[in-house]
Length: 194
Ligand SMILES: O=C(CO)[C@@H](O)[C@H](O)[C@H](O)[C@H](O)COP(=O)(O)O
Ligand SMILES: [Zn+2]
Image (cartoon, rainbow, N blue to C red; front, side, top):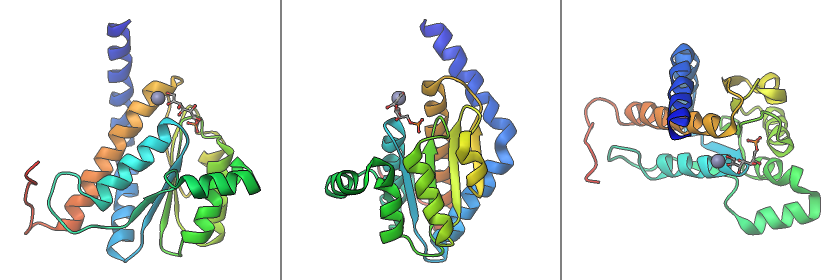
């Protein structure tokens, strides 16, 4: 069981090598957004909510280097907003409503969904598009409906949700490093103490 899982995990990550240019371009778009004064908004359900929060923490806090803070917000964190919007408008609206309230043109929305089909992520992307916010989908399986909806689709083509999630967090760490190196520039490239 463990051996099989490890082998499947490695195969899944190996598959990312063929996605190098798409991954780099999406990371560069996020870097330009932050350098231009925009913010990253990230949403997803369950494990993908955790991934959204993890990534936001690495942008607002830090990844590996000492630097100033940059703006990123995970849309799964405010329980008052989630319960109010979920209760009054339905769970499908919990992310879209926050995009409408917090998003500005020039921000980027990153929707994370292993199936590519979560309705609340779909609606958030539709809302962002209506507000001229570029959208990135970090997806799995065949990319689902979100693959056709987002400006940039990153699809981990695997059928196992856990393997997709493991690849997603790897990609988010790759992006965090790429973005951080771009934010710091060559001169101030200091390792953080911890
Ligand atoms: O972490 C896991 C499964 O590994 C679950 O919590 C999983 O994220 C949830 O079932 C999500 O609701 C799945 O949504 P999505 O990835 O299909 O958009
Ligand atoms: Zn999981």
